[in-house]
Image (cartoon, chains in turn orange, red):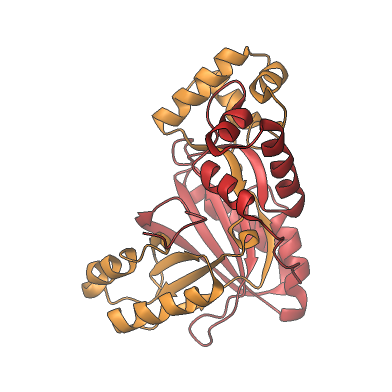
Length: 147
Length: 168
């Protein structure tokens, strides 16, 4: 990753134009050629420095639902429970964290009622309580990073 | 608190499905997408513009893999704030440039007293710890107690599939 890559990452995390030639517009603002910008984005995606390029959709505004949930999993049982939780297609992310509540995952579904169904199914299959922590209020969601 | 989700028609959902993995890297990406699903490029742009206005799209651009940028430490800072102060606290914490997500969530007493979550990213745990201390200073006496949960392992990470999730 060189200075040009960093420049692109730092200035293209939003605001990509809704015009016929948006790469040309962005390239001009960045002081690059259109072809170079497209080629750089392509390479950064292939290298895994970028995870995606395009519109970032808000699942909640699509009528779907997301919820954070946590479990207190006995250490000896951790891998078995992780396999069960990860086996649900609706579980998008799952992290081990250092706390009595040591497994934290995000459930994303097309309908709010499905969140409850997934939580109930995980409780039944694991025999453990799932602490549901749906958001009450969103103050900020803007995962931007300086390269 | 929140406005109901905007009405999305079948064409919108087709467009979302066609672009949830990203935009094509062509000179005229909206036209390329349109050609694939039978829409004019202008209509693709108009529908995206509407979705930006209604919040269906948060933004259009690149999404960086923060691990690859060196942000290898992430701490989920969690705060126990009096209910009548949580809105102002959340707004202030959400405005800090090192906080990527900030939400009010329910407590689960007695195990879980925390009602405000702020995800803090840094290049090391020490850096995350310093940033969390900065939040604590800013919130002052509004904080009853707080903690930081570091992730020790990623157990699963898939992109959010937004439409047709349950379809075989």
